Length: 83
Image (cartoon, rainbow, N blue to C red; front, side):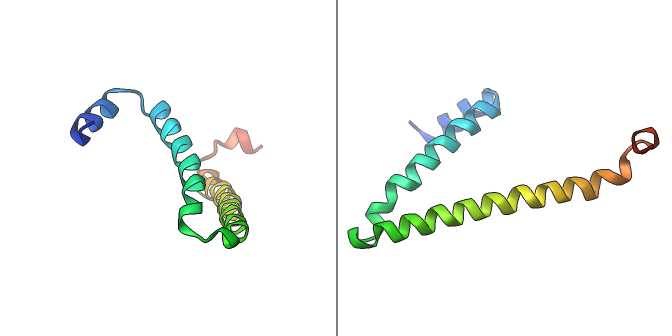
């Protein structure tokens, strides 16, 4: 499929389902591609490092997102909500 046609199709549909589908494809693809990047004897170690870095990033991202929401929405909270 031509890239221009794909961009046009994606632009015309709701973005959330498209992003969700692409995320799922990426998750499967990067894990499946790992054996082509490392030798067989290093596969367990590489998979462990990949999983650990993914989990660490996820924890850091959600933690920092919660902190940012608190910092930037607290000054805008209505007075009756804080009382």
